[in-house]
Length: 453
Image (tube, rainbow, N blue to C red; front, side, top):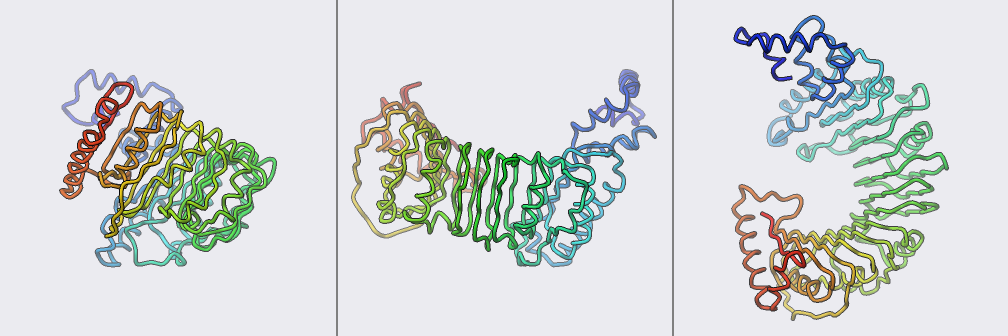
């Protein structure tokens, strides 16, 4: 399409003009299909080509308004700067919606920091999208960079805004930093027979949520950082994946016969005890295939845990906060409770401690573990001890990937991180020599030690 946009230039060749004429002979449906594969802003630029092209882009089925980049650094400047950016964003969205003529849209996304001052405009956008039978709807009003506003001043999605012809066409619903109650969500789901994906983040109005019913199509549920939430009840026969990270709440699993992926984190994982959370797991332990846990190493508490046998678990991801005197060997009980485990991923974040201890040894064979990924590796006693444990006890281990950076870190441009990465590599080289595992570590494809920068 870049050549099409250049045809008004006096220097265009005859071949380019012929190509433009050939494109112009295509029916509107085909041209709209081509424009749908372009970002919306790029598609809008084709309106200058001719009278016919002026309206073609207004049938674009993917309305994605991502203004998050313009928020960078705003909290370092004045409120006037923020208000100016918000005014520009509102004009952009409203102008596009006024121009849009198609009867239906596939996707509608709002990504920008807006609060309850813009309630009326956002209500209009919601009505527009639902009135156009939107399938994938996202309202992300959050920004980690704008920190001077409390969440209670956020936009509220009310039931009176959602009076539309039912059933709705929704297949995916994402709401972030939107005040929405359990009652409104339950009403939405009861009128959305095709909804498969629901994500709620940082809602201060969500307290109780009950998702139930044989007609519920929901396969993925994500609830994060909802500070006032107290309970979640799930009777969801089609649910495949659940992610919960937040306060310690009551979770009731009534019926989840297909639940295969579980993510648990936040204060819920920090405060759960053997008597509270673990009794819930056996109801679906035998069907879990992937488990992700955010956790802090607490050897005393973890010794009390009696993990159920996770007989079908293939992937285990542990996002661990540890001190430099902790022992990661307390995690081996969970690994041992997963006899079919094939992939282990460990992400480490560290805090300093001045306590010292001796290196520990544990012998406990794992017969199916083939791939290990460790992020946040520094080469200290704690992570080195754990690496040696895996090398000695994972009988079928084929690949170990060691990365000094976590997922949220970037290697380039930070001298401290680059130096830390170099030091981690040196320590890993010392590690293999000291423990005499050189042949095993570097035998391909039997075992591979990979450093990522």
